[in-house]
Length: 398
Image (cartoon, rainbow, N blue to C red):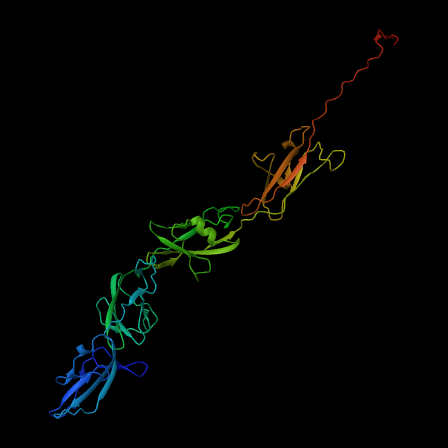
């Protein structure tokens, strides 16, 4: 191979130090020096073999011819750098390992070549095919129309040959597996627990979603920005943890889902799920008061009519009451009334708790009322201890 000029425009670079010597006069001999003329060695034939220069590095060769009378002629000089060392082994990796990182399974077989030397060149061959020149430090596997270059699904090998400025070469390889066939069947989503008024209103306080149509080993991802980006559960992450993180704020959401295979191929997008997430119950307590406080005044909470009037908060849709923290809830009657007949008489005060729930099923702040419905006093016993006894119409004296 011919020598080349170094990038700095100075010293000549070569991987073959064989030097041709010409222009020797008839009968003259020629001599060479590798130590700036300190010593001279007689040359043979018409060239100086590469072996005399030893290891790689900068070389300074001087050559002169000597006539038959022993008179030396002018010195010819040649400076060059010997480089017989192959470039470092290139690191060839998938630019996008679209499967699990490091598994070499992908639907995008573009690759990147690392460790290139300045001024070096490289070329590549796929599965033993023709060599193609590389550009930059990667091959994106995109055709002139901007489409992904297809490879049959299966195992493949890319060989990369790196060549330095003087032609020394080294070879690297990349083994990988392609899967460029996307899944065909779509998935769908449903609320795991629709806590709203019915099972179809899409209002809930539980962000857990069910992914419908999954088969063993399937991977999946969802989008909450109309398909602009997709998020998949992390290894070992439960669906509950995943959706809690994804749907972090209350409000309206539209969620899309798609199946993905181990190589990252995406299947068709399933139907959108629209939902309203509401995890905060009513914050204004219900108003709870006696409809008719029959006591001495209207604020003493003593009454013979324990009918209770309840007014729920504006964002509450359902109310119920109970008489103790362990008691069951009873629905409030029409018009927000709790009928007097629900409470027996007792001289002891009792407390009613009124709970309220919003449309998503969140329980809000309770309202409370303490009152007394006293026992009914018995009729008094009447007697005339000093009355006269009438006998045959004649009254006896008192």
